[in-house]
Image (cartoon, rainbow, N blue to C red):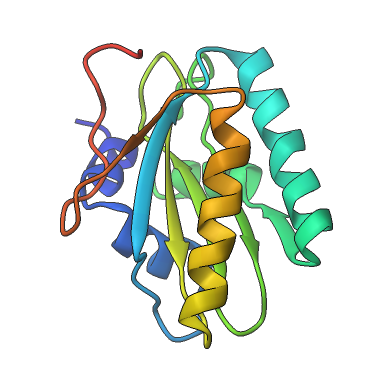
Amino acid sequence: MTMRCRIAMLGLPLTVAGLLLGCSPAKTPFVQVQLCLRDQRGLDVFREEMRAIARAEHMDFRDLSSQTAADFKVMGNAVDHANPVIVIAVDRKDGLGLAAVDLDTSDYQVGLGFTEGKDVGQARDFARRVIDRLRQRWTLLRVPSGRGAQPLSHCA
């Protein structure tokens, strides 16, 4: 099992806290979903959709994919170039936002975790808007509470 797969299996809470929030207080996602991007074109569309969400919501967009891939290489973990590293965050300074992380599969499966920040109501409204928007293009699967996103044997 690759290091990426082991990190993904720990679930989005640890991934979000460790990879995206850095020195900020760790935020555990209050809702998690996963989806299949299928290929590089799907990833490109997804990345643009995340940028558009960040603009519409007046939030920061951060694509940490290249940096994370370089970090894996430094740690001695080979990255499969047919299966890119995906680490994208859309967030505000107060912690409200989302993180998208690949699940180390050949069909570009991604898990998304939403964090609350200071206002639970705003966070839930944000998650609903993003999930509704993403459902227009992809099939989303809600991840049960207390369990991290796991790679699916096949994408729907």
